[in-house]
Image (tube, rainbow, N blue to C red; front, top):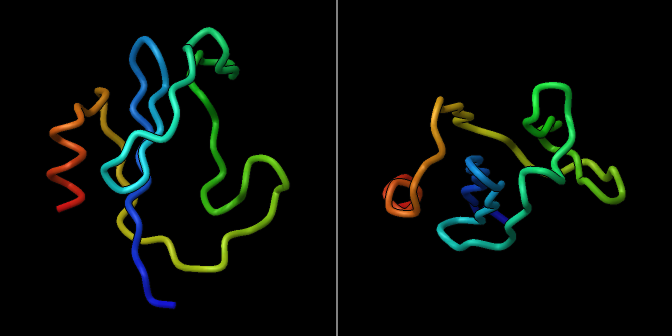
Amino acid sequence: MNKWYLATIAISDSARYYLNDELIATVPKGTISSMSGFPSATIGVGRRNQAHMDGKIDDVRFYNKALSLEEIKSLYE
């Protein structure tokens, strides 16, 4: 299968998880745990069963602000 996905996490007063340009989950910031108050992540590893992703990761970006839905859609398109 040769399919690309855009995975985005936008953090402000909550963490909003998007797949492509669709919101798939929202988590209140108070339930996100890490030393800095922001979630830690391991790229390419599943959260629940620790299964590794079978694919490639390309074009990883970090921003110093939470992207709006319009900005996420622009990246997806």
